[in-house]
Length: 315
Image (cartoon, rainbow, N blue to C red; front, top):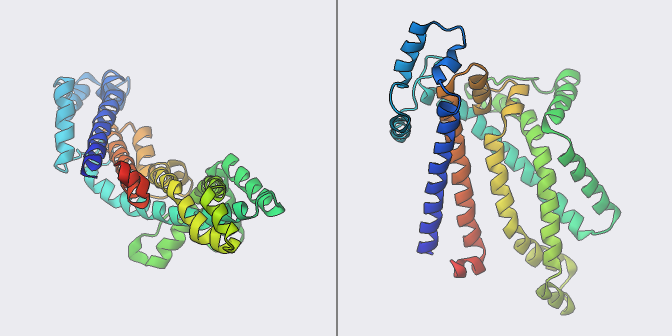
């Protein structure tokens, strides 16, 4: 087990190094002169020279890369060119919106997706199964921003139950913050719940076809007990991987939804940084999101081994 953990940690570190190199090359090397890109074609030479000095562009690319990495390891993410504020402060403010949004979306995904997949598998080839699979196909095909627009139109514009956008802040109360995040969470969760339901159905059908399930049924075990006590528990093992990947997507992939609802999260900060050519903020936030995705996948792999004894023996 120790060697398996060491191997997973080594894989995590290698992934982070490769991701940091790619991000650095794409943002600071490939565009040519980052200062020229940030200020535009009509920038004055003295302004360009001052910005190059501020960003350390006079140094070789290799030195700039290691300076950036060591700075992040010490908590120094740089100063945002647009906001004139340390990027660490911007991230600390925005993570209070993006993290609860991702967690609430993941909870709704599991609450909707797992029961739907189990019901579809338990009633295979029935009208219920066809209805659930049709709904999941619709959920996969329709983009989440369309769900967001429909939710705003119905529950904010017509019914006036929820705000159409914005976030009041957690200092205004947990209930108001929850109301501000509920519609975006539903819009994010519906497509992911559709994917999870289909994966759960497929995994459960494979488990129901195993020999030990047929043997238990032949010995007189009721269908409900065979389904819930044996089949569902074993079918959840591969679903863990999907849930981990979905949380990574919900944390790092909410840019469109945050812009639809005007949420001050990391996704909106990234979008604003791109539109305003704030390469310092974009580079740092993307690296942090990549780290979050890789770390969550690492935790899922560890949980996968802990849940499945067969993998634990192999490890």
